[in-house]
Image (cartoon, helix red, strand yellow):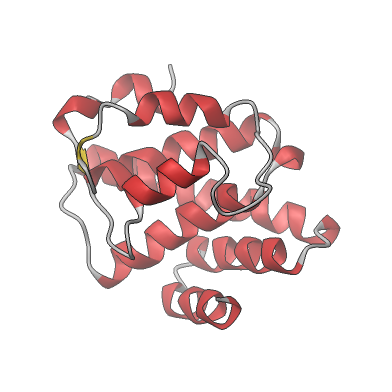
Length: 157
């Protein structure tokens, strides 16, 4: 059972209201679509809803385990947002924690730990500078180094 099947998305919200649209967007990431630019879907819509101008929501916390679960199926196919969106959500949550149930928090923490492992394994083969920084930030977040991860990403912005 995937994380999105155990989450009652209709009870969660994101930047635009009820998060019922998030499972379909997350499902679209399962094909590992190319991120040719910042408007590439489904990532553009996920970023917009889950990390809106630096703000995060309960749906943001719930989405991270699903993103990492998808990544676990084919880590070599990762695109920028597979590392950057969960790391950005984690940094924002560390700065201003979102109210989320304990079970969701546990899944989130476990996903961040797994994300760090995938990112660390990918780093030696990543040639794109932005992708490398996103993967480094994911490793730092998995180690609890949120401030350092945030500074790394801000330097890249």
